[in-house]
Length: 367
Image 1 (cartoon, one colour):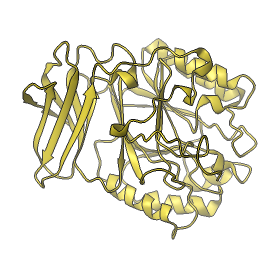
Image 2: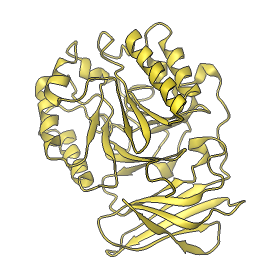
Image 3: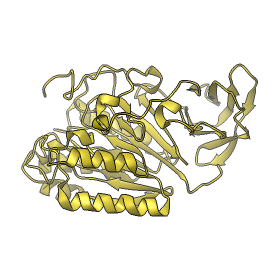
């Protein structure tokens, strides 16, 4: 990889809605953490809010116990259920996490973590408040000045903000700034939306699941290219994901051009093969770079329509990832649609996106 300091990899686990240790979602979280605990290829695991179903100290203590012996960093933000008690005191007191909002540089990327819930009155009264808005604007301005890419972590789409003018202002700040990705929760379903400037990605709920099985996503930012793919728990290792070039549907125009093929591999066994192919051409080996990263020894040929990679491990496990370079990209959306699910990409089975929108935002149960 040309720049080892220009790469971010993390795993979102969807809204937990924890209640008791005996509930299915607590056991599912334990299994997810066990699956991810040795994944040193990742920078962190991300929990996008609605961590405790009723926002009680007891529920946060349960989460803290589950995370205590987990070896990777975990970043946790707030959701509307975390405010169910009227404030975020139990959230901060029990989890001992940094006060939101805050920024952190990871892999050369500026990561911005926001609180959509504390400035509101509880429930889905999503607000940032004037101080946090000013902070966000300043952080994006400084990142632009440094020519540094950003990823924003917030509980829901900017369109859900209720403060006067906040939805439009935040959507514009993100769309016109250095933000490549906004990673959210709240929807309860996997969803990808692109407004022509920013990719919005939501990971399926763990605690109030209405579609498919429990799992987690693998998200990377490799230079300017974002990749995103969801994996259900029964799916074993290895896992290969193309990190560059970028899929035009996730990145817009231009990101797919003039790149070597690069991938991230998660595996618990030695690899017997890691190779890539353009269209129906020969398979070429990918060379290891460390931390699960591999790269081809030549640029992707001009005019390539389809790129695929495959890995096999010493235990017989296999995985394949594919990229359609001529799949087209979304044109610039109207400003009224920025920062909303109106730009969602629909069903995309290869990414784990079913397109059903089975959740409280659209077609799901009214939890």
